[in-house]
Each structure stands twice: as structure tokens, then as C-alpha cells.
Image (cartoon, rainbow, N blue to C red; front, side, top):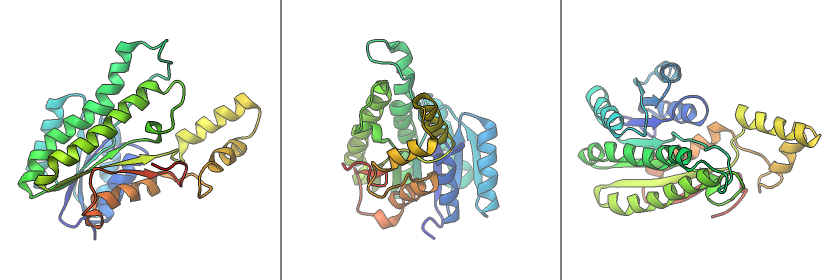
Length: 259
């Protein structure tokens, strides 16, 4: 098992990718701190982790609050024995406004979650990782750092900043045995993307299947990966299989674009 004896924290581990990452870590032997803003969501995921035979610690946490992040890390150490892995998955997708029309104060929320939230979590766990002799941090990023679209300005900008800080952290924490990498998914096939494709189909007068076919045709592999497949890439970077990998931005997008 890839993570036997390890303790992992997954922020944003409600439905979707966060849940799949938490369950994947548990299947490979990790005890998991399931963290998100909504108590009902973390409770459901924690129950699934425990059903796999691993310990789960459900914690409600706002990653924009550094004190809450510190308390979460301390609780992980107190109840599970330490912190070895952080998957920073919490995100805010912005308001889809253009740069000229945006409420810039509202944009600060997106930056607070996507950039500072990941930094708060990293600062909270890093001392505990050092105490364990090292650790692994995976930042869940996005294709929007590379594929720029109107209306995604603050989301793209905040995630581009996260991409940059990932490299800085890899440099600064490497001497302590802490690896820091980013995973950059494209479209993740699931309910939210299905809804978006149906919405596009209605606006364009075509079928959702035709929208899917158009987008899938942009990928090298001809399909859109689901959350479980993206989670597998996260687990790879969090495991010793990627022991020599740090500071990297790994696209997980079926070859839709290349770094």
C-alpha cells in the first residue's frame, strides 16, 4: 500500500475530486483528515473513509482563516499522530465577470481561497511535516493557468499565482524533505460539467452529446477524465513513486494541452 502508516489532510474534500482523493488515499492505507466548509459534506466522506478500514477525522475549516488551518493541523497531530500529506483542493471559481466589469473587492475572495488558502494550509502543516522527517504537498490547480478564457480572469490569475508559489515552496521546503507539486486538470467529467454542457447545448441548439464530442476532440485521448482518474494523478505525486519530483505542474487533461 502506497500510504501505509501515513496521515493525509485533504482540504475541499466534499463531493467530487476532494472526495475521490480522500478515498484513494484511504484505499492505499492512509488515515485521512477530511476538511471542508460544510459539516454534512465532511461527515459523509469521513464515513466512507472509515468504511475502507482507515481512521477519519472530519473537520470543518475555512482555509482563508489561518487560525482555523493551524487548529486543523494541530488536531490532526493530536488525534492521528502527525501530518505526512497535504492535498490543497479547496477552491473558489470566481464570478465570471470581465476585468473591466468586475467588482474587484469580490475578486479578493477568490484570491483568498485559491492562493492564500493553500498558503495558510501549507504554513500550518509544514512544521509537523518537518517533525516527521518530510512530507508531500499537492496543490490542485487548473488548465485555466494555460488556457485563458473571457470571464475567468480572477480564477486564472489566482491559480497562476498558486502555480508560481508551488515552485517557490518546492525550493524553500526541499531541504526539509518536503516535496511540493501541482496537478492541473482540464474538464473533470461529472455532474457540474454535464450541467455546463447541457446549458451550452441549449444555448446553441445542439445536443449535450455534441458539445461533449467537440470538447473531447480537443484532447489527444479523445475523452474527458473523471474525478477518480484525476485523483490517481494526485496520489502519484503524493507517493514515493514520485520521490524525485518536486516543483512540477503536471497536466491531467487527456492531452488537451501541454505545459
